[in-house]
Image 1 (cartoon, rainbow, N blue to C red):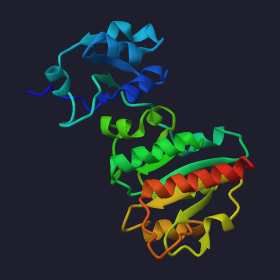
Image 2 (image 1 turned 90 degrees about the vertical axis):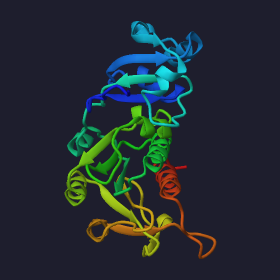
Image 3 (image 1 turned 45 degrees about the vertical axis):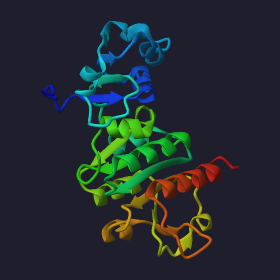
Image 4 (image 1 turned 180 degrees about the vertical axis):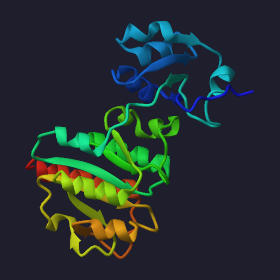
Length: 248
C-alpha cells in the first residue's frame, strides 16, 4: 500500500530539483530517500546539514512514494510547501525595472514548470496563478521546473481580475498576449514594472483578464502558423522584457 500523504507534505524527485530544494533556506526538509550514497553526494553537494535526514532505500521503496513513471534519478525528498507570498510583497522591491508572469488558467504542470525555468533565467520576480485551474506545488511541477520552483516565488490569487488590479495599484503595467493582439511586443515600452499575462493554450486569456490588460500584444511570426506553446511564448516574452530592461 502507498503511505498516506499529508496535504502539508510534498515529495520532490530528481537530482536537480532535490538539490535546489535542499539548498533553499526557506524550504523545510523532512526526509531524504535515496538509492545509494553516490546519489546522496550529488544532492547534498556541500550542504551536510541535512545528512541526518537521509534514508537509503531500494527502488521499490522509492517508487511507491512517487507518481507512476516518475523520473526520480534515484532520489526523493519529502518537504513542506514553501511559505506563501502575496502580491503586496512585490512592493518591497524598489527596483525600477521588474517583471512578473501571470497565468490565466494554465493548468498543465509541465508547461508551468517550463515557464518557471524561463522566469528564473530571465529574473522574473514571481509567477502569479489562480487557486483553481492551476497546478499545485508538486513533484511533477518541481521536476519540470528543474529547480526554478526554489528561485521564483509562486503567488496564488483567488480571483485573477482582483489580482491584476492589485498589480496595477502597486505600479505594474499588464501586458496580455493574444494572437489578435493589436500591437507587436517590440512596439511597447517594457521598462518599469511589467506583468506578462498569458492564457491557456487554445482558449487564451478570458475576456475579463484581457479587458484588464493595459496592452494586448502578439508575437510576430514568419507565417500564418502562429500557434506557439504557452511556455515557448512565455520564454520569448521574458527574454524580450529582460533585454529591454537591461538595455541590451
